Image (cartoon, rainbow, N blue to C red; front, side):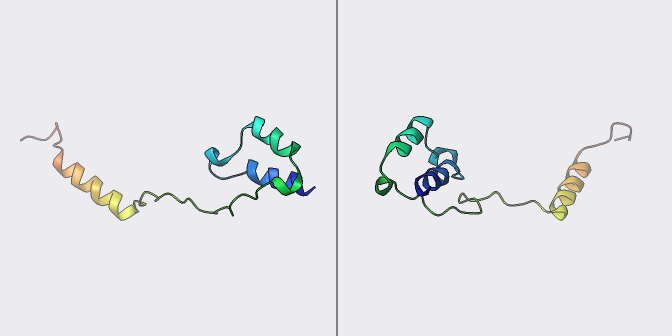
Length: 77
C-alpha cells in the first residue's frame, strides 16, 4: 500500500514534466519499497512568476485613452 501511495504522489505532480512516464511508473511499482523516493512536497500555487492582474480601473483608463486617440469617422475633422 505504501508503494502505491508513493507512485500515486509522483503521478499527480503539479508540473507535467515532474510526472513519470508510464514505463517509469511500471519500474517504480516493480522496485522494492525502500528504493522509492518520495516526491517533493507539492505547492498549491504556481512557482513561476504570475503575470500581474489587470484591474478594472486599468482597463477603463486604457479604453478611454484608446477611444480618445481614435477619431470617429462620422465626426468632421
